[in-house]
Image (cartoon, rainbow, N blue to C red):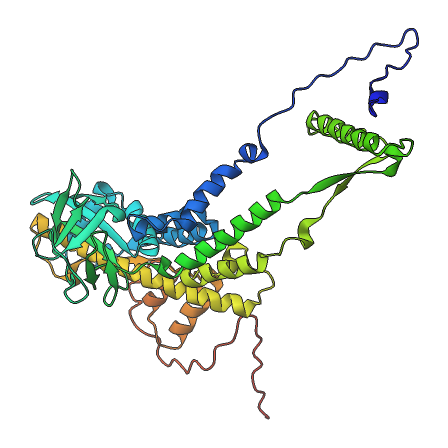
Length: 458
């Protein structure tokens, strides 16, 4: 006897009643993991957190940046600060130098992309290596970015050679592209623009097993390797545990076999019921609800109290990422309940870290300009080159700028033209004199603060 036979009975139809159309369906045999793409996600992150056989440490950094959105967003946030720049052409010694630099920046090179890419590479790799393309009389015509993970740096020793910590590579003489490969290329240091940070005391083992000291820059990611792997280890384990646990179960009440006395027949009837329930559920679409007898009930399990919550751990790891990169999480809406003081201090730390990277870029770009002028045969000194400057990371409001300029002029510290330059206004012909009789600035009032002057007795 089929306990679900009553579901198949055709009720008596009255005359004139429309005949129902029976819907047919084909159950999908595609597993949920394949539909959701979970297998691909697991495969990528499992390789990332378990594989130690990366060709170079820079390949590991690439994987970290690829899989972690918090890390990727912070790096992108800092990289885009390099797009806010200007070159003070008026500080050039003469028009020849000024026009040569202007032509290089505005016509020959994609200068915005060079700065943004250099800032990104300094954050991720600690190094940005570029091949300078140019010739005498023409100057530099292109700056080609070279992949960091395919580069090695050697001194003047003949390749191949061994270099341990007792005899490391301590200066860069040759930059080797794809060493020990079919298409190996060797560039002298004079043709390379190598931008690097924190390199003076940095030990680094290159892909050839040679130790270098003070040659390669140090990546900000070096202290995040274990933290990122631990983060995805925790996430993958939790997802796998939740996916493997039973989210629901079915119970059959005693009413199903209350009229059956034989134990064997009871067992057979229960097995038949379970088989029919499984067949029924497998044939349902996502928008259909099963109709079951009163003695068959479905129970759903809330696994929030079953699987340990690791959100606190992941939050701590994400905080470590922000700490290493000096990007406050409040700037990306990640932090809740932060006070203004905490936000302000975090922004100050972030600004200092970004300015350090920008200063490294400024010095490297000055070297680029100098090499361009040398190829053109234009005599110059470093102070003759127009400097590159970045805009303020923490821009002040127009009201604060006006107060600062007015206070400097009224106190006799700034000339009128200096105050106008702060405000971005044109200078006056008679504005090079300071205001005479400027008094003490005293204590500056805070924004929104009212100052009450002392009232003297008459």
